[in-house]
Image (tube, rainbow, N blue to C red; front, side, top):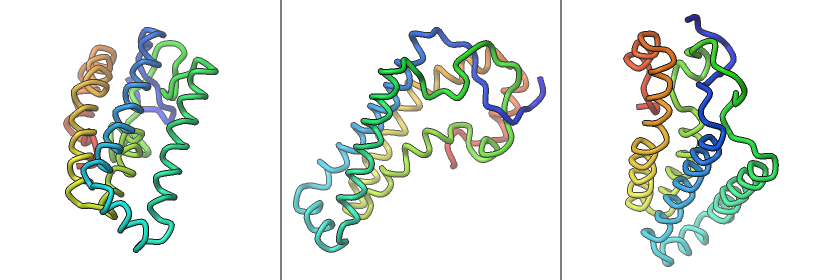
Length: 166
C-alpha cells in the first residue's frame, strides 16, 4: 500500500476505540499524579514558589486538557483516533509519523517530563510508568491491528521509525 498524508487506522471495534483512548488519557493523568506524589508536597511547594506561576499553570493546563478531552469524547461519542470511520487505505509514514509512530502519545508524555521542574526522580518515575503502561496496553493493541492490516509495509515502518522518539 502507498503512504498517505492523512492518518488512517484499522477499523477497530467502535466500542474499543473510546476505551483505548480513555485508557491512554487515564494512564497519562495517573502517571502525572504519581509524579507529584513522588515529588512530595515540599518539593511541589518549593517549585511553585521558586518558579513563579510555572508549576500551577502546567498542572491547571494539563488537568483542563484531560477534562476537556474526556468531556468532548463522552458527549460526542468520539475517539481521538484521527480517522474512526471506514477501513484504512494506506499506512501513513510521512510528516510527523517519520519521527515517531505515536506522536499523540509523545504529546501526552511531555507534561510528565516537565515534572523535572519539581523533582527529577519524580519525573523519571512518572515517565517510566507512563511509557511502560502505554507500551503494554494501548500501543501493543494498535500495533497488532496495524500489522494485521498492512503486513510487510508496517514491518518496514517498525524497523525504521521509533515507537516514541527514542
